Length: 201
Image 1 (cartoon, helix red, strand yellow):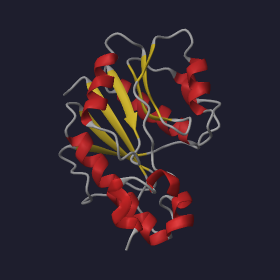
Image 2 (image 1 turned 120 degrees about the vertical axis):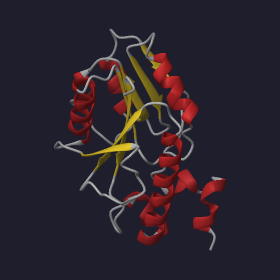
Image 3 (image 1 turned 180 degrees about the vertical axis):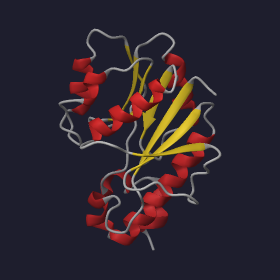
């Protein structure tokens, strides 16, 4: 067993429930296709990372999907809001004996294995690593001991999440990775070469 654990939060890919803000422009069917494309990309990127990996499903754990259970532990997200669901996943990781636990979502096309490896490395000399997203949130959060307060009292999905998180960590050593953009609305993919296949048909 590795001492590093990578958590991957996913939504079950269902029509009408995936990428709802994006769907307002491209429609439900295309939004679902784009989300499945992002899931596939997240799987490829995370497969190359040297750490144990756990997928946390939003609704129901699926067998026989793209996540090979020989590589990915599978769990159900537990909690009333995103913060509590993340907190419970981090707790599971530390309780299982991991020294470093890190979470990513599944809607970031530009994330690379190198980003994630670098983040694990930075936890040797920092308490927390954050990958800032352009929308004011974060695409990656890693820590080498549980920092409970970062998961509480946040307006999840708003542009203040990262700022509020950094305020919680004023007495900790925090490393910020490069800023990347996750895919939430049409403007996020409009000019991105990888997504033109979905836009121009």
